[in-house]
Amino acid sequence: MSAPTLIHVPSFIDRQPVSRFQVMIVALCFLIVAIDGFDTAAIGFIAPAIGAQWKLTPVHLAPLFGAGLIGLMIGALGIGPFADRFGRKTVLLASVFFFGLMSLLSAWSSSLEMLIALRFLTGVGLGGAMPNAITLTAEYCPERRRSLMVMTMFCGFTIGSALGGLAAAGLVEAYGWHSVLVLGGVLPLVLLPVLAVLLPESARYLVVAGKRTDEVLRTLRRIAPGHVPAQAQLAMPPAPRAGSPVGHLFAPGLLHGTLLMWLAFFCSMLVIYLLSSWLPTVLKSTGATLKTAALVTMLFQVGGTVGTLTLGWLMDRLDPHRVLMAAYVIAGVCIAMIGTFGEQHAVVGVLVFLAGFGVSGGQVGANALSAAFYPTDCRATGVSWANGIGRMGSVLGSMGGGVMLSMGLGLPTLFVVVGVPAVLAGLVLMVLGSARGGRHAVA
Image 1 (cartoon, rainbow, N blue to C red):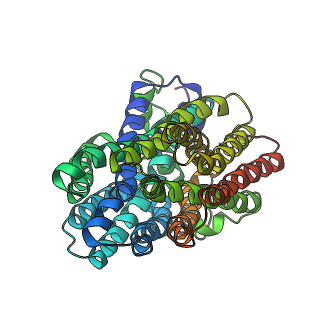
Image 2 (cartoon, rainbow, N blue to C red):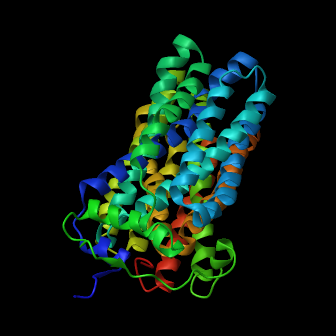
């Protein structure tokens, strides 16, 4: 009797062409992060309408932005480690259900305080969903296509954010700002049963955890029909390391990269959420209509989508750290120029598009980099904590924007200050790449 075929799951996935089954996984995670992006960005697009109805100043609106982002931070930090213990799919479905329900309830807020509380809870669910979608996608991608596939999936976030602008432009005038939040709640709840049926658990996670080996073999047969013999067995990795997945992030070989990754995420998300939250308000102050302000801000997300696809293609072919460094530096320069052309809305639209190309597209690239950097036993935690630390930057950016506007800074000065962290994020990733010799990632 011949010996059974021994299959090493990561190597098996890397050797196979991309299958329709893997494309389906990317598509489902795309839908998750699209709705995530819609719900995350919606508050920035409807903020002017909320402020007008409740007679709020930018300073009053700042806690509204901050509450959702603090929730995102807590969700990423708190929920991520559960996915390394109980599975990506389980935690992902729970997160989608929770943020959908909270978004739906927030549409019936009768006061600013109630809306702030519900946006915080919505953020907790959003913070748990996105890193797990990134992790699950990365674990089904062959290494040679990982950056492009993960970043294509993450285009859902920028597209969802852009759709938030379109929804705000069309729905707020007709039905009020509440209607945007209703849509943001209904969409994930409708998607949930589809995910429960079609989305698989991570094969890499199941192998490392020593669970459901029969399910792993069935999944591999869907990736490569005819290439997994009936008598095949899985090559089992060493027993998982003892201790918390969070502690693994600081193990030798990961500590330096973890700290650099956190700094890059912090700077990047500070810029993204400051612009997403306050650009409509700033543009409105220059004489733009609410619709024009929403559409120009939408170009930031459109630029992010184009940048994501372009940078993902480049990262699979060149040193990904150098690619991201260039993208962030270009974005920082474009952001600094926005204030000079503040009232020329067509020029501002071009600059906003280019800023989105570099900083929003670059952030997606950083997510792909983090998913590939960490090993399976702490990958969900690593991606989640990088996002969680980044959310600290997003909170500072979203709330600090209101403070900066209240200080009466001129637009040229304001946007130069905003551009500096984008440049810093690129330089940090360049340092990370130099320390790792340009290597793509841990397999």
